[in-house]
Length: 171
Image (cartoon, rainbow, N blue to C red):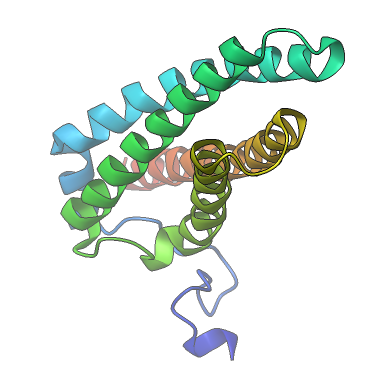
């Protein structure tokens, strides 16, 4: 039932519930983890773009497997870093490590992103599949990452709109 589901962020009026309580907003705004996430997210996205070009180049030409592989490893390490620091951020802001109602579906999808990136590393280390097959797996991981990044961008936009609306109401 939607009304009893903490992961369904709607008020009875149908308006979206605020992502943050006033206390959570203060914790968010004063946390070093917020700044770190704000730095890591675009850095990871830049790494993703470079790696995507290298992976696609390899898939099109058969050349550059080494560079593409290194870039996937770097991208995966960046992903692990942002996921760990993001869990810490959720703990600081919301009091729970992951799957807080405000970011429940983003966190669920993040687990798929992590699983696919980790599957790539396992396949690489264990020598499973062909180079091309592993690159296609990386491409699937990148597709899920792009969807997940979009989820977070939309959530960030919603938070900014809600903050602006709250500021207008307060004024």
